[in-house]
Image (cartoon, rainbow, N blue to C red; front, side):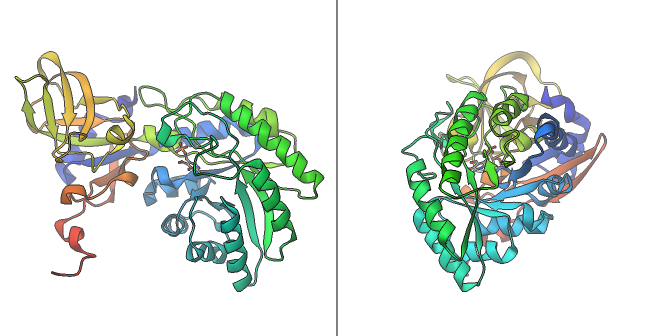
Length: 407
Ligand SMILES: Cc1ncc(COP(=O)(O)O)c(C=O)c1O
């Protein structure tokens, strides 16, 4: 159970000092995942590029950087954050289907490891940008291996018909073009089949297809250095990371001993278990068809339940009263989709009581918004069994209008 890493007394002291809603992360749990990956892949010596979109808060990124990880960024903003958090430029890769010329220029000027391009037009743009800067852009192509990862359709990305990547046929043409360009240097090939993937089998299938393609490419004179198998490894029901050994076996079975440098882009599996969303009960509403706990955290803080039907374990901090009942934990936002957890069995909480929504470290804060003009939550990091620090202050009403021109 994840709750064992988050002691109630510590959560209470955080709530007393900085209020709720607050994202609380555990340094120890974050590092546990990072080290589990390193151990599982020890024989393969891969480059891990933490997918910052899962959680780009500086303090967590800095932990990954200190462990020797690189970063997978998907925007100029994430690149800015990655450099600020201490990731080495030579360990940063840039993914995403619509990078602008300005973003490509930023990445090239920073000297990142490679750009995962997703279309011929992007490669042509990259060539123009590199020519202007008078350098050769290291490029990898995101290839769509047409593999079903069996996950939610919004996070399934590796089937033909998705907006991501290019087909093997298209990739062949692009590599041959790039290999002849003075301003492009083909260095790698990548796939990312989706997120919250629970079986290594689709990775083995996609890796096999990519490896066969790389052999074909080599026969046409294009030799790549990096085989990037993306991210997507899932967290189990209950919120902990699934053991990545089977993933290591699947991709190692294909790329081990080939001389290619393996690259992985894990996000969710590293960040999700390390964080919870700490909220306070505002009201209870009973007597109708359903029982509701109305909390001070809402879909603007954690959109995953509304967006993907994600189920997060939730629990009261401290004891409730009376026999357990089924509750929907909802927020104050004016949307029926505003729920954090549905049908949770809990005793009755008192108003003001704390509750925790677990496994919320990934795609929680990073997807949060100010919807309903709700300032974004604070973030705190547990640094030891009895210590914590603020890593992002709660936004204020002034923050809500800071970028607006005064009416
Ligand atoms: C290109 C790419 N790499 C890595 C990831 C990280 O996936 P996850 O957080 O599921 O590990 C994503 C997520 O969408 C992605 O699009």
